[in-house]
Picture 1 (cartoon, rainbow, N blue to C red):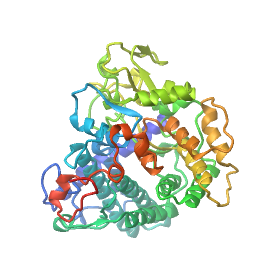
Picture 2 (cartoon, rainbow, N blue to C red):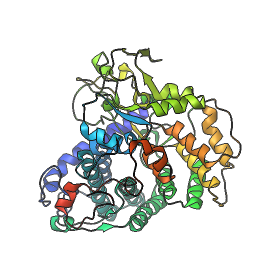
Picture 3 (cartoon, rainbow, N blue to C red):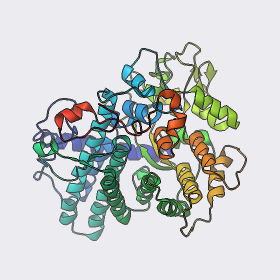
Picture 4 (tube, rainbow, N blue to C red):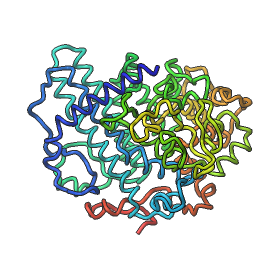
Length: 512
């Protein structure tokens, strides 16, 4: 498994680097809004390259899609802002680190953020950059398809376009969850047009996301050869579509999509919970979507990795390759929750205490700044070989796991979904598969609260909790001590930097 994962990452990152360099002159000409906080902060869509590309070479087809995948590694999309807005803002995690480190993250932790918060602006820009990269790939694929001579190569171009549509849909799903009404950018626009685009409402956004995913499902393959493990396939698109419908209470659709994934037999739970979060366990049969991160086995060179794991690593630990910045530490609320449930297996993986030694033999020193860290991003020292640290650089970011699919399926059925089920599972057998792996007793006829609690225990520290609380109507109660205000904190503010660049943007309720 490790060998196959590395092959995929190597091919993906090498193509990405070549493609990015090749297209760089074109990407810098046309978008004239300057500065690190430009509206959308996108690659130039007003002057796409139309010469110098040999569309007849099928081996070139994946290059624009690879560049779109690379956008997912943007630190604004899946490192600091993502961790803060999707996890630290909820009750599972605290800011961590030292008390005076990063006041903007502290604002997310205590829900005191305003539209000027820099991390919120970073996330906005990063996800629109992903949209831009996906748009470029989507635009390019028909050109490749038209230039191909055989049907297999033409189909491959359509499949590559499907991957780019899934990437775009995923980006917009996170954007609309975070900000509500945002602009839909799906075509080539001039810089003036980009600066004047208006927001779409959530109904329009979800319809747009739905269309991308539906079209992708129609063309994507069920799977790839082993060397391409981790690449977006049909079931990735179906899982994201199920998650989208999860947030719009379309329970029949959630049940049908998750049932099809389960019935495919392509996915399953790993026997050991800890293995899911190991480097060797990446892109396993439990994974439907991961953001790929790798040093490519090097000690220096191109940055083809994410610092997602590093920024959450044990602060003040030694040796140097076993330490990070110590952000996003498990909260006392989460520790108490695990204790009350009698959790031992999941807590042993999720909670990394100072003053202990890991099963892999690494010490988390008593001198570390924080009492407990996120154990799901722990990487053994043997992997951390980058020249200045390397902690977690080879660790992928889990977006959707099979256990999430099982729990979505169970919740849809308890909410009254009445579609024909082909997998043979029901709400009880689905949730009990998740519980059985961690040696918890079976539940008969689970309630919604039991499913929600199971989601918290299973997906803790995986950036699911904040919007899960909002989705289920629990946020006002659960986050009351953090100052959650109903009618305001369900959405983040539209960044003020973006509103200055585009005066058509309308601020969300509760933010000045």
